[in-house]
Image (cartoon, rainbow, N blue to C red; front, side, top):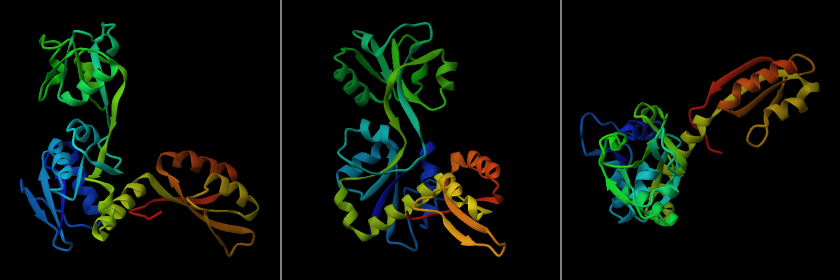
Amino acid sequence: MLQIALPNKGSLSQAAIELVREAGYHCRRYSRELVVRDKSHPIEYIFLRPKDIAIYVSRGLLDLGITGRDLALDSRADFEELLPLQFGRSRFHYAVPQESDLTPERFEGLRVATSYANLVGEDLQARGVSAEVVHLDGAVEIAIRLGVADAIADVVESGRTMLEAGLKTVGEPLVNSEAILIARDGSVTENPLIKQFIERLNGIVVAREYVMVEYDAPKELLEMACMITPGIEAPTVAPLSREGWVAIKSMAKKKEVNEIMDRLADMGAKGIIVTPIRTCRI
């Protein structure tokens, strides 16, 4: 029986459950259950605070876990990142008042408020800066206004919250975070059930980045068409009943698809259709 930790709340929780369910596993949480058993697979899902997941996994108490990279690093637990999951993306940044000229290198002797005390402490030490790290569990953005800190370090998604608090980010991100699948070490992939779980999740992650592009084109333009839609290995090409024409099918990056359609239409392609991909193995 595999035991896999999922976030019990927060922005990562529902997205993690949806990913697992899209991968063909049964993970339905009706209320605040701490344990949910998959009726079709030998798996139990354990719902924990996202910041605690890496600790349980690193000690071998649970086989796998889904949590944020920033949370896992801040826990100081020993873990191995098996798969980035492409959701819950954010940056972990220092921030100061908008009118301030402070930079992280000038935090010497100042107070830095954060919910990620370990990450910040290690970063300041690496910079050779001696500053007081003020640990807060939430509402970090208001710490400067309330006189608790001179600067803060916090998760930044859109940046709107920082702007509303009269703050600006300074320096490069300490961590570029997203949801990740973790284990104690890479040896767990020798377990066939774990290997299958990783492959299924990866199939969903990849499928979310791609679409399938299908279109018809004159055979004489096939070389140009293959340059526009090269696919993963190569596009699928089939003859049409119309003399001198071929049907072409290829995977393409979702974020590039409108530009690709423009180029295909300008080239002379017809019947251009784009469809989503539910899952794939590449």
